[in-house]
Length: 333
Image (tube, rainbow, N blue to C red; front, top):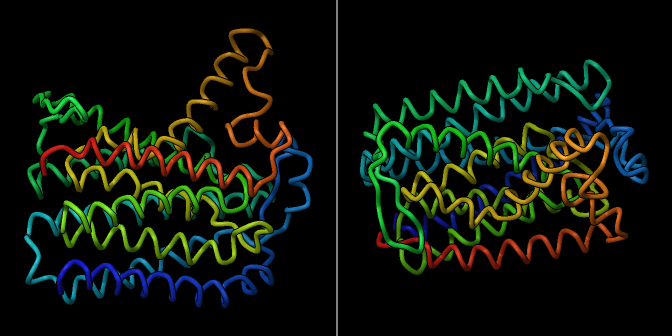
């Protein structure tokens, strides 16, 4: 199956399966009272969202696994072994992060509050599996430690420090997507721009079945979920879904062997994380002063009077622009 067929079949499988599973799952989550808890320190108008079914990310995770199974059956003898093993590593890494998110979401339900695992426990789990992911790549695909610098077309073999940098990117981006998931439709919409970016790359310069597949499941997952998640949201993805999508977003940079490019095509996610880090850091250093009205960044604009739909539209448009910029940083492939 050529990459164009892989793309369209995978998009359809993921999108249709996500929509159908959510149609069944939302009433199940509601009847089981698996609803979102809202932090008291958040925007006061978010309190109206309390009780909205969460953990809806399960739908697009199952849909993505189904699409991957079809891809494996059809392409296992046609795709380069090294490329396929790299794809398998990324998919397993995304699923493992989803399981961390699921544990966190279940802990929130058990405690009946918005805080599940402690930040330290959550980060420890993410760290362990980020390291295991890199170890697996090292032994299964002989991970190249040559770091490509986008736009400057230069490369440096940085040896062990490549793994250190990769570790911080893995943990950082996964958590950045998680932080972005704070208002209706935002995380899925920005992730959608990443999927569209890689789809465009597939049809213009890459022509790669692996990139084609992953761009397809990102698009199918995002669009399928947005059917129920655009404002006013009928379901939230929970950490289960956001950590899965975050792992796919950063995983794509490993598939194209250009790990720094995620800082460009994931620009909005990086800004969300930086806003949170700067807010917390400055709050402690200045003994109570703030840089933003509220962090992460999307809450600042909410406090400035922007509607949720406006924030989603503007943030998605900005990330789309940076995805265009990222296209010129792909380098020689």
